[in-house]
Image (cartoon, rainbow, N blue to C red):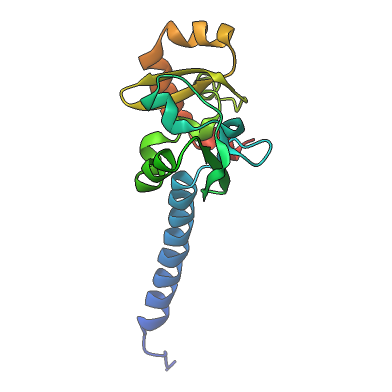
Length: 161
């Protein structure tokens, strides 16, 4: 007669917990990446040093001053005044451009394209930067659809860059 070892559930539970932990870590890494986009900052300053608050308050972009700067999400953000810097610091997501400051139309097409801070739009309280005036005309033909496609593509297009 052959003797068998008694079955133990402990190794199976350990394996399941280990696999769950790996899956959770992979999901958490994706979630962190989605929450921490890399902002377009070719010279170290986000959106070429323009004050993002002025798009909302003055209705036009204005160059920021290095004396009124703050570091956020790996980029230096410049502002025309202490007041604008404080507004940004109180709620940076309310002012930061969508899609990391990359061209909203490009992201809608699955591309990561630089922008011209002078070419922009605010829709539903969000700032969208565009590559060029010509690109703005294409983007404007279907703003809602382009935003929907860009939302679906982001941040995967940045990861593929």
